Image 1 (cartoon, helix red, strand yellow):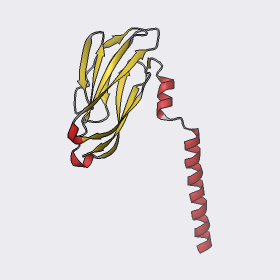
Image 2 (spheres, rainbow, N blue to C red):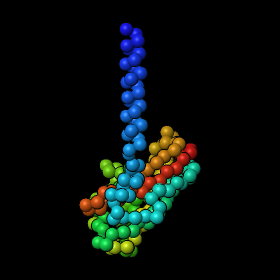
Image 3 (cartoon, rainbow, N blue to C red):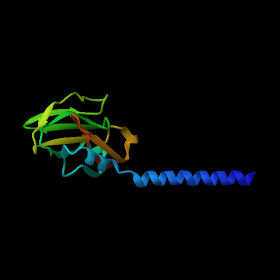
Image 4 (tube, helix red, strand yellow):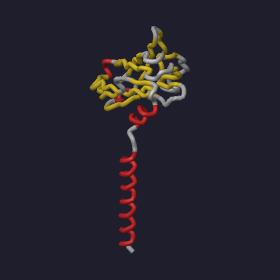
Length: 164
């Protein structure tokens, strides 16, 4: 009886391992999928590492530049962040929109700003390392999402190591 149970456990573990291996070998990373699906926007830099930052020194900022890479105007429908510790401000054609935050924790109302073909806009990201209090130390990763009409969301990412 014990040998049947042992064989069943070994077969089950091997099957689970094969499924995990197959899923990893056939999947495309999320960033690559988004880049393939959303060809409307482009950015020379889609991720940024602040390095080690201190809660005591307050918020840090970084500006991403996005470009409309299609031949038609791109209408920015929404801009939002993945966490309440982060805000994003869109600057386009001398106008500013925002700051926008996490859904449910800050404005994410419709923007409706248009980028002409090949036009650029900047998105200033502000991360407050003290927003999560003393428990918020260590490695963090956050996302800023730009949504347009009839295209997949475009993501800009940043990371940091937060110290007290």
